Length: 120
Image (tube, rainbow, N blue to C red; front, side, top):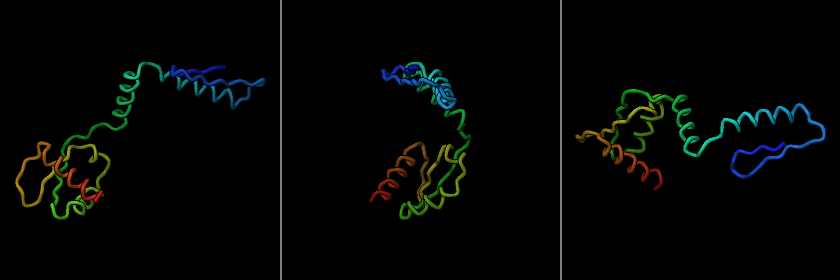
């Protein structure tokens, strides 16, 4: 028995006597391979569809207030107690003592400064 996923590499299963383990493995492998067909783009779309189904986006926005001087400490204190759904929400960053509307620039700056702090 030969099994191919279309990548050019075939898996050959052969035995003079088929055992229950081999038959079960073959059936499971064949079922997986049947669902893995299609072009790369089709498989990519299927993966993202399945991920969205398992982790639907959360509505609302999470406001995170941090101090520039203690950004790493503040970020850890604010983010550690987050539940799963909060990680999927939009984040609005507010720097203490500064006025600003987060249309993406403050968030980008927050992650840039945070990355520098983590890796320095």
